[in-house]
Image (cartoon, rainbow, N blue to C red; front, side):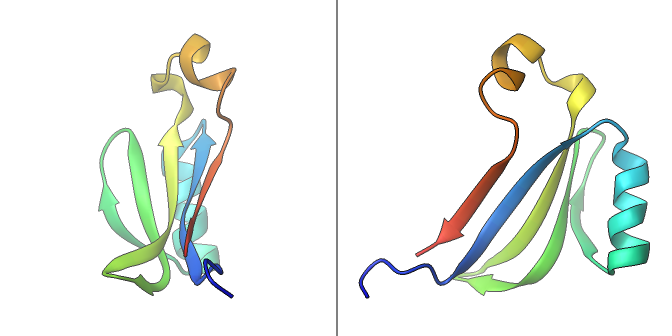
Length: 81
């Protein structure tokens, strides 16, 4: 089938406790951070396609303007076709 989904690109999750959620996904789920700063963390879920790993991305909710993002986007999923 043309355009069928090959895999997950990334899933974005807005979190209130970035450090706590990072520890949860690292220690209990076993995901490895591939990029980290004070506002977001990219965790590798699996190998991806075209050099882009399948990722879970956590974004610190307190640093996002509620009027811009919260009313429009809660979470985001990107699929690879």
